[in-house]
Image (cartoon, rainbow, N blue to C red):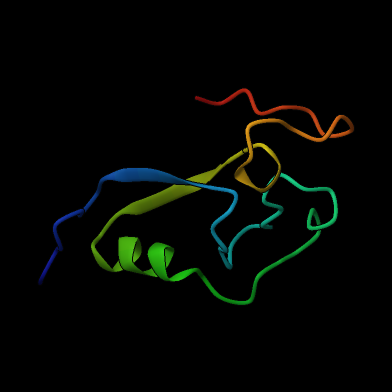
Length: 77
């Protein structure tokens, strides 16, 4: 069995990355209900390397420095 270089490493990805297991809003209200049908390439590669994707991290709108006033700002590190 080939375990891969990231076997068992717990990882979370920013909400900018499409994931088939969770909605991808990218910090925006317009995309809050978007459910991707496939994982982003980076997510696929992490999983192929053996990483355990635990979830997604909130982010500012579109990865900019500020956030939309109606959307609460992210509190995760």
